[in-house]
Length: 435
Ligand code: ADP
Image (cartoon, rainbow, N blue to C red; front, side, top):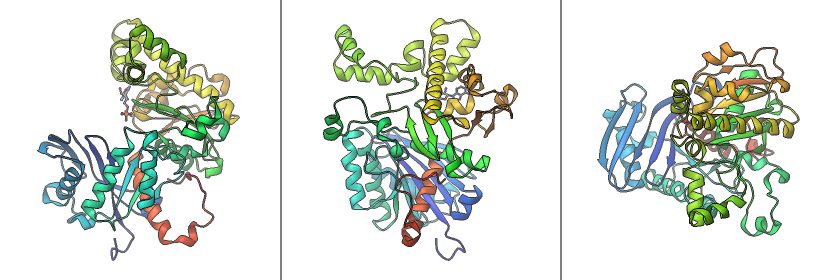
C-alpha cells in the first residue's frame, strides 16, 4: 500500500455462508473510486466446504477455472484461497504474498439497531455483530466465522470492515419501522422492520445521483432490487425512508421462492389445515412460495418468461402477473410516502435483464408521469441507462448493482476516515449515499 505513489489497496471482499465463501479481490483507492475505475482482480466462490469443495475462480486476465479440493472449514478455505491468489496459477501479479492483501471487507447480514454505517471491525464491533445473531440466526454466525478466519489467516492487525445489509435502512422513521403490535415487543425483543439489500439500494441510488449530476440531498428515487430476493426502497434526500422487507427478508414483494406480504393469520390456518409445525409453515413461505409456489414450475423468471412465450400456462402467467402487480403496488405506495420521486431504478438479475418485466411493472404508471421508451427499454440488458422518454416527469432507469464494489469502497473509506479523525467529525450518523 505504501511507496506505490498512491494509497492503493487490494481489498478482499468476503461473503461467508454456512458452507460457502464468495469472494472478490478489488484494486481500488480514492482516485479509482472518483473515476469509477476500480479493477476487479478476481472473483469466485468456494462451495460445499466441509468435504470435497468446489472452487470456481475467474481472474482478470486468466480463464475461468473450476476444480475440487478437500477443505474442512472456512479458515482452511480462506487460507487456500489466499495461497491460490498469491500463486503463479492465479496470474494476479498485484498479489504475490498474503501481505499484498491490504484489507478485508465483509458482507454482514444484520447490524440490528447497533450499526447504522459500515465500520472497522474491533472486538467491540465483533461483540455487536454477535448480539445481532438473534435477528439473523442463519447468517450472522457465518459472517462472524469469516471475520475470525480472516484474523487467523492475515493476522489481527489487518484492517477488516463490516458492511451491513441493514444499515442503509436505519434512517427509516419510527412510523415506518414499527409494526402495529404491542409496543413492548419492540422494547423487549427488538421486533421491528429493519429492511435488507441496503448495500444494493445505496449503490444504485448513488449511481443514479452521479449519472444525473445530483447531490445526495437531491436524490429522490424508488429503487427496485429484483433478483431471487426482491425489495423496494423509498429514498428521499439520499436516505432510505421506507423499504419493503421487514423484520426478516420475507416481507414485501413477491420473490423467487418467498411469498412477500401475507395476512399473518394465514400462518396458523396453514399449519392446522396442512398438519404442519410453525417452523414448517415458515419454511414453506420462504422456500416453496413466490414465483415457484404460484407457477408450480420454477423460481427462475427467465424460464417462466420462456414458458409464457411458448405456451399458454395459466399459472405461469399468474405468477408473472402477481409479481409485477405487487411491485407496481409498492411503487404507488412509495410515491405516496415520498410525495413523488424523480425516478424508479431497476436492478438485480430480473430488473437489469428483463425488458418485459420492467415494461409490465411500468404499465399503468402513466398517471404518475412515467412514460416508458420501449426502444430504450428493449436495448438495455445488463447495462446502465434511462428507459423512460425524455419528457417523463417520473423517469425509469436500469442500473446494474454491484454490492461487492461498494463493500470494497466502504472498506477504503472506513480505513481512511480512521486515519483522519478530524475530518470525520460532524459526519452523518447514518449511512451516507457515498459510493
Ligand atoms: P440473487 O438474488 O440470487 O443474487 P440475481 O440477482 O442473480 O439473484 O437474480 C436471479 C433472477 O434473475 C432469476 O429469477 C433469473 O431468472 C433472473 N434473470 C436473469 N437474467 C434474466 C433475463 N434475461 N430475463 C429474465 N430474468 C432474468
